[in-house]
Image 1 (tube, rainbow over the protein chains, first blue to last red):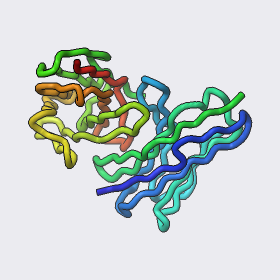
Image 2 (image 1 turned 45 degrees about the vertical axis):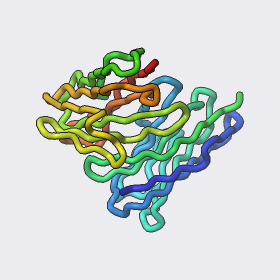
Image 3 (image 1 turned 30 degrees about the vertical axis):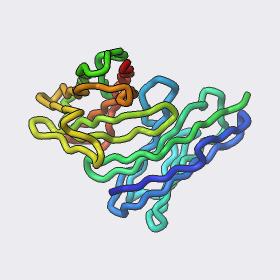
Image 4 (image 1 turned 120 degrees about the vertical axis):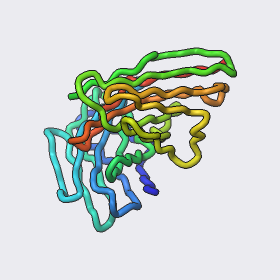
Length: 110
Length: 115
């Protein structure tokens, strides 16, 4: 089955700086890569996603890049704000199968 | 986006009892529903995938006789934890997707505590 690895597990940045979270996957058939933000005790919320036929996608301060050859994808958050503090999960999916990374706890220091 | 609800949001039960958790898609028809388990400060672990009207597909290592899943309609799936034990205490989250978009929508989760 699919194996998704995520790094780093924790990340602290100063407000206004950028944050980068990286994930790798093992199954070359995976074709959909969403990123979720989860605040403590709440449900994961989709923040951005990318499909395998696209190399990069941007939505305001958030961007995702995908390298299919290397089987890795990254989340980039620019101009971080305290409200960006949360746990972020990447996922790799094919068909009905979704496999999540281990999560990154992001802390934005005011 | 689409709304998924879960009930109950929090349940405490005695060891040996069974607990049923409901997952409902409120404004769309969910052809597929997923059940995840999440331990504190850990990732979501996929337990099973269920399609309406058919048997659930369980992930390796998940006991299908212990975690009974029923997806009887396009808007409702249930997870029953049978003969619960303290090690079953966890946060259980469901998600649902329609037959169209790939995106899945998560429920708010159910915190199960087994005494």
